[in-house]
Length: 285
Image (cartoon, rainbow, N blue to C red; front, top):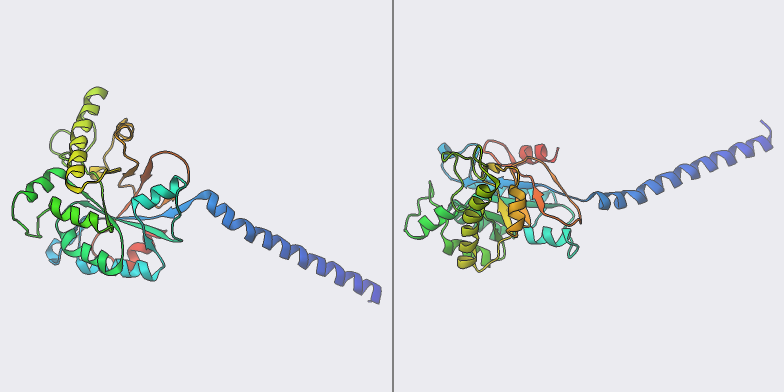
């Protein structure tokens, strides 16, 4: 091979290398922009009751050790727990979120949250959202019954936790968390008119809003569907009542954007019997 041809081949080879390098630099530069346009991934975990008694563990009951292991695992993996207020601020363009945000939510308002999870939140500096049932909160606020097998939070306990800055409160209805009154949760009864359905939600959920304001001095903008049950028109009614964040029971990782509108978040139920690694890896997939 003569020298001239060899020089030409070397020049062509160098140009190819430069072109490939430029292409990959272009792709790398675009990735953050695309990620920002697509939004922020937000997984949400849903707990219910917590018990030290193994006979109570199951789909909706876990041990205190499980909760602590979950929190430690999330910290090790670089997750940061966030509040609904922070998510709202991000979506409305008023704030930012950490690199790997995650939200911890607890439904129904069992007193085991105060006994077991609240101390863990303080220990690890984490945040959570508690959505109690109003009727049960009223009942256990008027009596001294603190059996953690079945007791519910009192309004005093809820206020203490909300005042700590680690706990937010969500509206889980006053007395619609049932499936034995001709309807399931906030779902419509068969043949129920729009007017009757709206009146029902306004009365029950509005009553819980009043209680939350009265006992915690907070305006609640978070709603949690009992059983995840909803019907046509339910979201519009909730929006009219001023709710800005709505929790469902759909198992999905949420993608947050900076668009106006109600933030509807899916959640993953946390059962007993799975390690933190197994549960969160399946959730991430």
